[in-house]
Image (cartoon, rainbow, N blue to C red):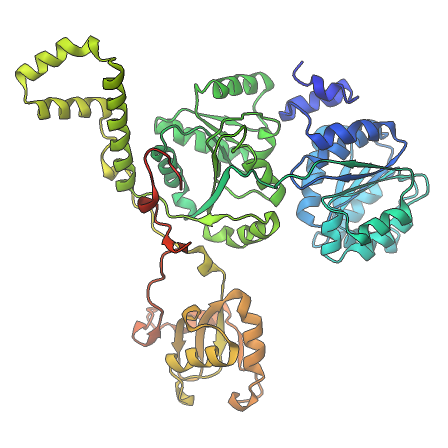
Length: 572
């Protein structure tokens, strides 16, 4: 039985069926440790494990096994530090037992009326952020008198985000007859103090800490427009000698569309998502593991539990929703001593989310430049030469001796060989098969447009505005862009992270203000349009713009793809 390892942990057949439908195959280390202890329902638990180790199933599966469905009383409360994690945990737990289980997410920013309606109707499990949970407790709209399990997920992150006092107060509402399960990657003193105050009969379970990402996984990203992602993906596939990887999409529709596009281009691709039946899933995975297909396109949920140790690539075609999903994804390459590459495509709209993800995973994800059509053709030529040399060395051409002599008797050698190449490779060496992908800098989206109440009537010109921002606000001149001076005001684009401090500083310069209004503020969309002439055309003659940006540099060298590739070992 494929889920025999899960069955040995004490899970019921109904839960095993749900896991099979989700594509789980083997339990993670934290699941092996935690599930049997939680099913005994005797001890409070402190479980130390890093993000991306399957903690949601570790605490969610035992709770689903033990609770009384549709009791219309809150039996389990799960606290998460962010609403994104709360939503993810909520969805995951619901998928373990559909039909007779009521789970609801409670977090700030969502409609209070809808949350009140659900709570009044009765729920079995509440998943929420500390602030909103505490709000409901103080209002008396959340009743924990029947609570049996309280889970603190990512407890150290709640401490880092300043929620620990809220958590302390929430725990004071819980009845004495409850179990507390604390999950944390680290155990700071404040968290340890909380456990001593509220937990009893504690059993500590630890998973050996490993690096969040595999040492052998090279993490890089490419900046591309959403419309160019498909062409970017095919370039990555084409430039590799032996591409074998998983491409992650966020939705079922995106998986199906990408698979269809790949098949139309002649690639051996298969797709996995929640609508794929178990029998079809097993068939697809057999093909992929035998390399009858070398590209597997999947959603995060559908890829859970897949164990393939020799992937060359993991491609984040769309950004994962949270750092944990990113870690799950890229951890599938760089296994079993094999080197692997994790690639993420970043569109301008995804820049801020990507910046947050980088900070959370605390790993180097370096920027690279996509290969051009010329790069790919050159790589293919090298591959052809290598394969021809291998055939000659192994003397596996004997069956073609006779036809070779006939062709050379009729044609010049160069003509015969060129014609054979065209017959074998058709248009593969035609650079026009690879349309231009325009380069972009997504960090330009990480900027703010300032409205400054100084213009030509005050004696200011673009150069003086740049000098003002550099002198008074400490912003390097090379980071000040697209300065525009009008009669009574000006515009300038500066880094997003500098905007608040710059406005505060400029507004303190009362000697420059023309009246009582603020000297600087964020430009509104209507104001951004005011630097156009009546015909809607920008007046570029008075525009101040920096020159072309330098190419991305790392360790003293350009990251230009074509200058760094080695056809014997393809490294981005």
